[in-house]
Length: 376
Image 1: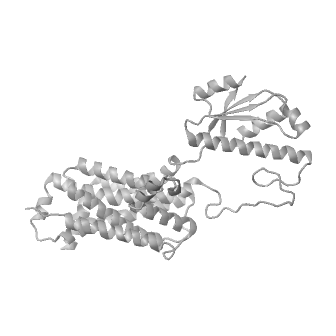
Image 2: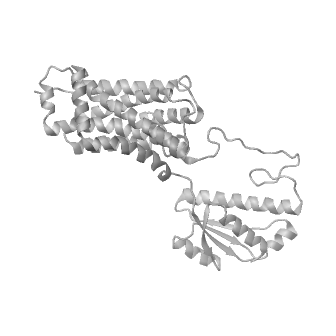
Image 3: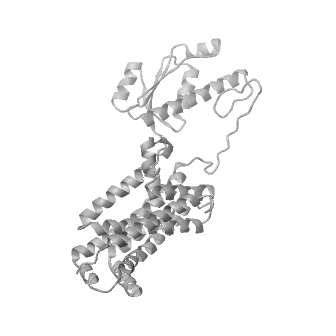
C-alpha cells in the first residue's frame, strides 16, 4: 500500500511544474544571494572630516581613514556645525574633527586630541563605525611613533609594545579570514531545509482538502501512519536534493566545504527534515485553507528563525529569549551545521543536539499521526 501511495505523491509532484522548478531554483538563490544580503559587516560608513589644521599629518590621517575600506567620504566640512548638517541629511554617520595645531602638538608633546562624533540612531552602525575610526587613529599613532624612533614594535592593535617587549600575534581559528558569509551559509542551509520540508508537506495536504481529493483517501482502509509516511518521504527526498544543490553552490561560489565531511551533515539533516516535516503535517491537520496554513507556517517559521541564533548570537539575547530558543529545532540544527562545517565536529561532540532534534522529530510526527482524523 505504501508503494502505491508514494507513486501517487511522486506523480503529483512531478506534474506540478512550479514545484519541480522550485526545488532547483530556490536552493541556488538562497545559497548564492542570501549570504551576501544577510551580511552584518558594516561598510560604506559615511565619514565627514573637519580638518582645522590642514597639515601633512592631518591629511595623512584623513587619507588613512578613507582608504581603510570601511568609510566613504561625505566631503570635507568647513566646521563642526557644517559636518552635523551632513549627518542630518543622511550623508554622514561619523564626524572626525581634527583640531588646529594638530601636527605641532604631535611633534612637540607627543600626543594630540581629535574628536569623533557618531550618529547612533542605528546603534550597531554608529558603534562599529566608532570602533573602526578609533582603530585607524591608533594605527596612525603607531606609525608616527615608529617614524620618530620612540618605539621598536607595534602590536596588531596599533598600540606600542610594553617595556618587556611582549609581542601579540592573534590566531584566528575555524574562520581565519573572518568572512561573515562563511558563518552565515550553514545557517541559511538550515533555513532552506526548514522551508522546503516544513512548508511543502503542509501546503500539499491543505491543497487536497480544498480540492476535495483527500475525501477519497479518507474512505480507503489506509492507516493514518501509512498515510502520513507517504506524505513525508517525497519531501525528505526533495529536502536532501535541495541541500545537496546548496552544498555544490557553496563550494563553487564561496569555496566552502564541510570540515567534518558530509555524512554527519546528512545524518543531522535526516532528523531535522523528519522533525520539520512532522511539524508541517501538524499545521496541515488544523488548517482548513491554504491561507490559514501559510499564515500559521510563516508565524512559526519566522519565530523559530528569530530565536535560533541565525542572525543574532544567542548570548546577546535576554534570558527569556534564550529560554524560548530551546523550543526551536532550528537552534540545534544551526549550531550543529556550523560546528560541522567550520570546526569539523563529529556526532560525539554534538550528541546532545542530535538527541534534541530526535526528540522534536518523535514529538511532531507523533502529534501529526494522533491529530489526523479520517472523515467519511
